[in-house]
Image (cartoon, rainbow over all chains, first blue to last red):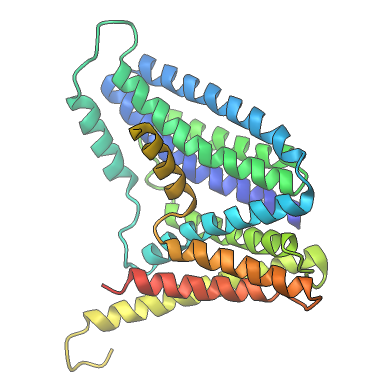
Length: 251
Length: 65
């Protein structure tokens, strides 16, 4: 069960971040030329590889109890950020993340920027692609390394991220447009739920608590987080509907 | 100096995000769990409860306007 959840968490979280990175890279490539954008992607991938190579072995030297406490706390605040946004969007309080709008905005900005220098690499396109891939990739690396090391299975988390990369990159190559059809908020909701679940589980264990049934408690925590989040979406939707209803009309 | 500020801001946004209250609630919840566990009291139920409350409060704060 833990292995399935580990793979699923790494896969979904990576897919969301990669869709965002792909949107920026496509805008850079279309507006400034593919050469610079792809060089930017390669440079960011190299930088990420260095970060993961430095971070992974360092984490394995920390005692597992301390590691679970630190990673659990980080995942918890990280997961709650995702869940908070996903709940607000699902309830209609916050606008949905629009990859089409982001793509159009990035494309416009990239087109407006003047070409810097006459060398083989356009530095604006390079920087745009590099920054997009590095920032989104850092989030993927963080999730893969922390999830993998805490569960003692970095390869499985890395496989989840790799499968996501292959699917997102494959679809990106075929459509060459932002992946606006991906139900991003639904995936973010699922990822937020999973990160929060693992965060609660590991942070509690790291703080010295013992779960009834050990790992078997994980599905129970997942159900609890899922139930609370769904309930909060319903409550916020009702509150929004009530606030929009004309005065004197019962909502 | 501005690079240092950007660096700190990046990590603040990366870890703390839109509402610092969530991070404070998580830290307090973990601290209370550790305190209970050190007294050999069952503490597994505490963090889920804190998380549910923190989520409710942060969403109320976000929709207060």
